[in-house]
Amino acid sequence: AQSVTQLDSHVSVSEGTPVLLRCNYSSSYSPSLFWYVQHPNKGLQLLLKYTSAATLVKGINGFEAEFKKSETSFHLTKPSAHMSDAAEYFCVEYNFNKFYFGSGTKLNVKP
Amino acid sequence: GAGVSQSPSNKVTEKGKDVELRCDPISGHTALYWYRQRLGQGLEFLIYFQGNSAPDKSGLPSDRFSAERTGESVSTLTIQRTQQEDSAVYLCASSLVETQYFGPGTRLLVL
Image 1: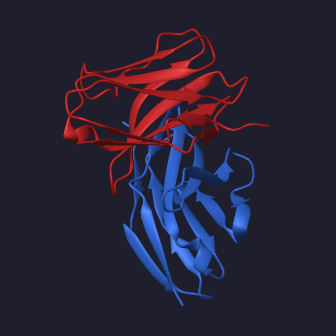
Image 2 (image 1 turned 120 degrees about the vertical axis):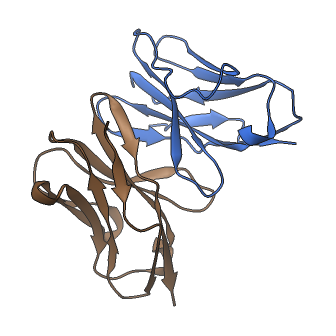
């Protein structure tokens, strides 16, 4: 069965420093992969998606993610964290009409 | 255009009562998903509708949960004889191909 693993449940960074949120997927096929962000008491917002085109995907708010098939990874990065980035982030795999969610990573940004 | 809408935004009910949650998907989206998100946890898949096909009910936690969808439009999620453990945010998402768009959710509190 497909599974998505977000390696860190919590990540804490200082404002202005880089962000790395890690995600590994399990599919042996080429899946579609997504990152969503959820701010407190808000719905999920699509950050970016990978659908077998360029392996480096740029999203909104300066985020990007790189698809690495050899590592089955799709890590989310941002060069410089902003206070408004504090939220929960979900990595999602889409395969055979189903979506598989990671358990989420809470990002804390310190001033 | 309009996004996914859900109603009510908040619902407080007494244990043992039935509740109905509504989702209006984006017009033209053939797929509709329901998820449950308990406090501090990730998303739990409940049910998936795709066009006129039989729904995938594999995520429904018990027979107290049911959902309907009229064609490719509105969907209702019904929880009968609510229990305190049903307290959660219920999220609806719709999609045309592989990208899901989420509604703001219904926050259900069972007293």
